[in-house]
Picture: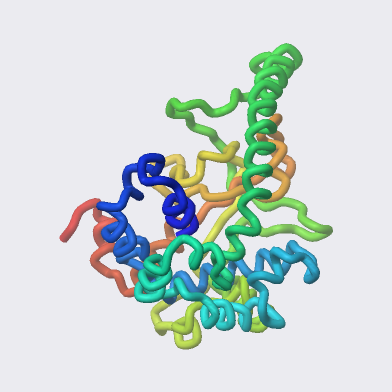
Length: 299
């Protein structure tokens, strides 16, 4: 919407092709996504408002522009009630009102973008500068590590197939012991221990779970496998070449694995194949899908 307004302020000869007069009506009709899922988008808005609330002080003008209520939950309703672009009809009406109407609108979403985009551009440029320096420094660090350790430690992953071996194992954590696995019981514990609130809220059907759904089945597990960012989704196989899980995260102690790997506390976190099947088959009742996964074919 903002780009539309800024393009409309330019002479037609200077506009990008899609913003020229003969294409404007079609463009306006298609700004609002055809597959817009209101329920999902409202939940995403709640997450974004919680991020603002938890990271910016209340007096921050940027946070105030969207945090209109006492908390993120109440702000969602207030923001949507004040927005002119939360429906296709509203988008079309405002877009057809002209560039000045868009840019001078009191719509909270438009105001937020106008207030934040210059700072966002500054941060993106700074981030690009850091990333460029990081690439050079990582190369220098890799060369230094090789001079000290030689081939005693494994190299970083590349674009080629690489297998990292490891053990399923817990680790010392905050003065206690993190178990090697979590179960669906743990999800319920978080849900009730945090009073059913974000970020541990579960869908309503967790209130009345199917009798056959086994909460004791492993959901996630920790292993000493060496992974790094970009490896998420990699399969974990056992000694029989059976897929037992999919890697998706690492613990806090795994951050150092970008530079050097040790097995004391560095852990790969994977979702359990057993847990996935339990959820697909007995919670979501997608029996055909679970059968296809287990039998490697559609029956």
